[in-house]
Image (cartoon, rainbow, N blue to C red; front, side, top):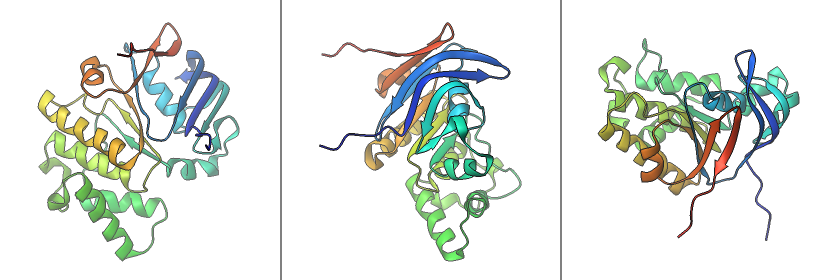
Length: 230
């Protein structure tokens, strides 16, 4: 049986948060199909882990590989290729407010090297279908609810068929019912497509309702919580 290789692997990694190290000695593997929560209080380094994975924060020490890229020695010109293998979903959506849903997605595809107009249109339809937003492709972001904007943000994350979705508090700005819809969507993508998900959250009730591995950041460390098995 072939050994599974992790998509993300930290070994003795020290993680920067701004100019200071916020996590020392992180050991963590994320495999295809995994759903991993990163939990902890504000300021414990949860988001810094995500920023390190996308090579926004440099690695302070130790080792980290992400989708075949070694972050310790990654070159600036390699970072866009790394990010094409990742889909990122933010708490505040980060849509471009001066263009439509369709134009937001078109912008990302062109920025990541897509050139065929028909291929671009087809891919936009596919990802909007996947999140139930195809009928609102021509709407401007301000015409959408918070939940709808987050669905578009998830569609954007799916554009390049990522190996991993990184979600930073994706339900933080949403009411509980809308948050459930977003969690149903993300967990469905994980289950049906086998896309690994790494999600930062402070909402432990989400972890109970949508089970996954839980990694807790506290006291300058980040360790996996071992759950009791029935």
